Length: 413
Figure (cartoon, rainbow, N blue to C red):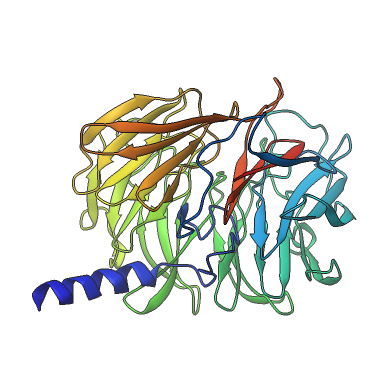
């Protein structure tokens, strides 16, 4: 009887932080459901340029966002022009790569120059039953239905002020049951925004201190209450979704500026580019939790572009040089580390009892892990141009959809 109760408890904990769109055939947003996990059973395991690449298409512009998938449609954003004055949304058929439609928008705000150090179409869209929702560094937030008809649009820089800072905005939209959540942290007045999905109107907006980062918030349902957890440049804090009130905060951390937080339903794991700053926080706190809810700090871990991945009793970090670091979820101690073929912008993916790692040079590993180290089950590769990289991916049954700056590439069985 006791084992049955424990099993039921674990099921509830797992269910509480799953996305509202947990359907097997969907990949609705950045990192899928926000934790880089999938329940899809049939995934490709072997591919290369000669075998396994189903289709490859050029995008309308250049971008760094991840593709999203709804039913048989793939959606991806990009920008174009010398000053990112054009914004693109392309829709493709998942099975054939045929373009369904493409939309071009004029950016509300234009940058003075485009360089490799400024985000370019970085925020990933989200998708749901009613359509696709896109956001750009220009402040343009737009909703389309699945046929490409515009439903509503907003110009956030005109409403709340221009974005300030030298590297642009990178935070992606987040799906929540009745709307969308968007974090805008920058050198100017920052804010967290909760938006009604149906008409695009603001449900609530909470002001934040200027704080430059490119992380995406995490939606969690803990203790029967929906919350939004943010990791952002010297601060981890939690807001109640119902009214936007801040529930708790943790500010004993540095350089958590790029990797987004992850959860297993009990802990929030945060990655930082500084040593001894990647850590785990127990959920359930109130107010300042610096002294009460820190679970552990990892001594030797650093985290670059890829977000931490929690899988069972281990949490995985990838540092800037491309080393996979496996830490104990219990105390943060290191189980092992493994040198990858290259660094990663895309976050690792957990699928069944395996982990996929997608390096920026197009090489991928499929591994099975243990306390002793990884067992490499497959090494795969797609062709990536010398001046480009793999920025993100989408997941569907029998398929992965990879995104480089100017292409999307579908591999499959």
